[in-house]
Length: 210
Image (cartoon, rainbow, N blue to C red; front, top):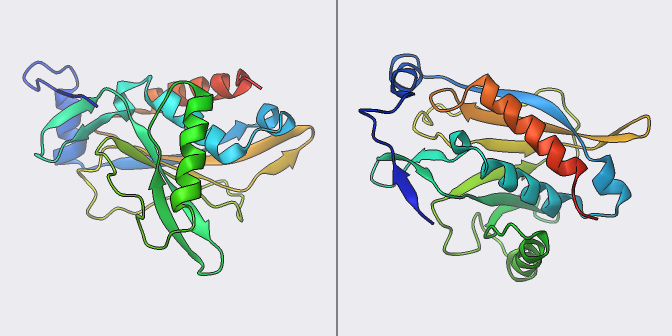
């Protein structure tokens, strides 16, 4: 993991960052629909595939990797890995796990399955130790299909990393559609960047190797 410090004296986005971080603190969210028909018809396990696809697209766009490090310095991680929820039905609670990124899906899936086997039933909020700083959050609420989903972060103005929430699949004709909410900070990410993200994510989903 590398963290490239942003030279804010010459950063083209500095005035936008100042406005949306200091003057008018602003994060925003939107909900889109991801067509996952190819994944479902191909028998692909949805959750790890979604984690892989989200991470692949996050790692293509620096706007989704911009953050403050532990010292409060603004910079860009060279790559991110997913932190994601697993649900414990008996306790009606969830835990957060994380899996290291690998651009090869089979390698990523093997790591995901190993994490599930070792920590998937472990109690507690974060049972897997050693979570790195370069993670972004993904959660799944497969009981609800939604058209809007909003998170409230009253003390989260310095949290610049995106948050993704997926819902319950729905059938529409021959397509299987997944609601996907995206929350970002306007200081580092505009609507244009979210639009590019969604286009790239759908392209990767449609081309997912079966």
